[in-house]
Length: 294
Image 1 (cartoon, helix red, strand yellow):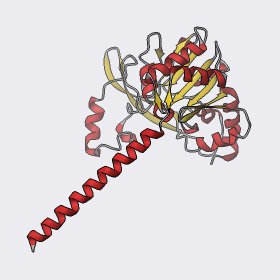
Image 2: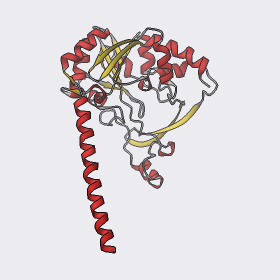
Image 3: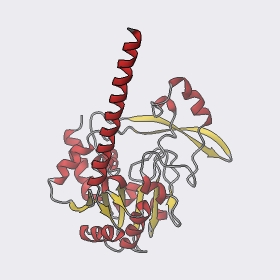
Image 4: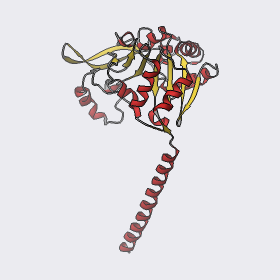
């Protein structure tokens, strides 16, 4: 009887494994067939069509995989952006390394809690030259290493910028004023810059955090965060007060802002480009947050 049961299970398992792998292979092939090819010329054309011009200062958020198969990958996207704005223009991207926060904040939720003290002890101090980005994507990760690109000093919420205003945007990124008026996105506002979303939604739109900082709403409060930094050659954990933000309503803000007709859209591969004035977006969001956020 036991032999029969073992044989039956073996036959069932072999059959299940065969059809499971076949289903996965069919699904992968189907997804691959849906992908569209995107060339560097396609990117440049889309940027021109959406209104990117020489001399503009633009905050760019990207998801390379959402666009399809991009020939040349991140490099092609970066080169197209730089060529489109020219030497008098400026490109900025988020290069956050938010894993450089105290594990007690929960940023290492996927690791056993008993490891957190060791992680805190050994995580390298922030070094803007080499510290990698966390979940920012392939384009910002390459962009931060691009020749001539500057990166801000914030150990968890840095940005990188290239072009005419790169130094102005990245210098003196205050630990506490992460997204406020003195931050890189606050300075982009002063430059009357733009936001470009490439294959991503408003939940990735960092400029909305400037509206967080400016708006008044009942739940607004400060929190204490800590990051590993290096001072005088010594690695230390530095604590700082900063505004508590989460972005939970950013998609709703984006949906409402879209109704104003102030956002331009152009298809690119499997995704879309969306471009808007950062000032118009932030001013709208400040009012929306004051009226709707609890």
